[in-house]
Image (tube, rainbow, N blue to C red; front, side):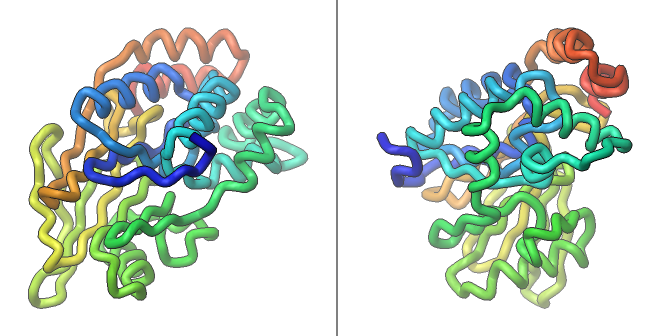
Length: 259
């Protein structure tokens, strides 16, 4: 297939914040494929922090050629144009990442869209409220701003994003009050289209909740069900890979501890 070829969505695997972690990406893709995924959506931050940016970009471009949806995240943007003087850890990682990628890789990241809408589903890396500003969605107020922006299209009922490295679900009640729900991995959650929903799907490549297992979510459109997943993989091997790069030790320790 040509890159960007449309593929029908029945079960949409939602992967975000891969952060140049090929082992975690492969583990989540394999798990989602076994679980019946018919299409993949990669919601940004393909690179940054992790040890294998070139391999991850190559793999994701292959997935895009097979119909995957791919969005840009803030770390993708920073890798394309890292600051001249790197000071913060993310800036140090961005400068290193930039040096690992080819001009074609960088052009690919630079050209990625910020959002994608598929019928009732709106996809974004951060918040649908000014997506280029990379607002975090960590509470009901921020979720409401994102949901309201996405649902300016009356067909949209579901907003899926990443950025915060947490798995959380928000929904609008019948009294127009936004509620926050922390899901249990592996348990399907009914998402009837009579309500509006927003989920942050977690991080494939860099969880920060003290559990180093990779995160992703699966949306079954036919059943209107969302299932959050945790996937084990050899995160210690990724920490070893990170130490071999010469990047700050903090990156490897975070990988080992999931923080």
